[in-house]
Image 1 (cartoon, helix red, strand yellow):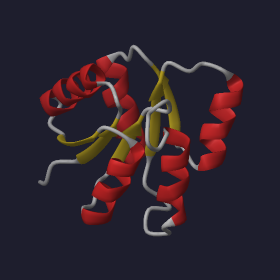
Image 2 (image 1 turned 90 degrees about the vertical axis):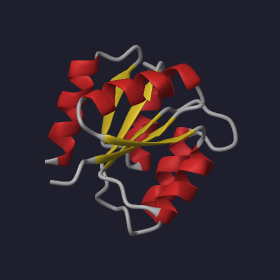
Image 3 (image 1 turned 180 degrees about the vertical axis):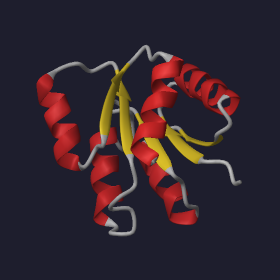
Length: 122
């Protein structure tokens, strides 16, 4: 069985490292990007099963990244989880309107994160 592939998009090296550790220990293959533009470029080159993105990033933020992913047509049903420190309803609404699948507030609970990924992918 092939490993599930996860693209993580976050400008924080600490968060990327935590996600990498959590996801690889759970048996996922992890691809990482430090902003939305790099994430978009990676999605253009390889298929993934789920995306985890931050909102507040330089170059291209998470909302713009999600809009761009959804605009390609190729990734209409790709699960995109938003992992952020943002808790406002306005930001949640923006994430949902852009095409986000789910919302997880940092700091994340590793077991809950894995559970949510399995839920949105299956």
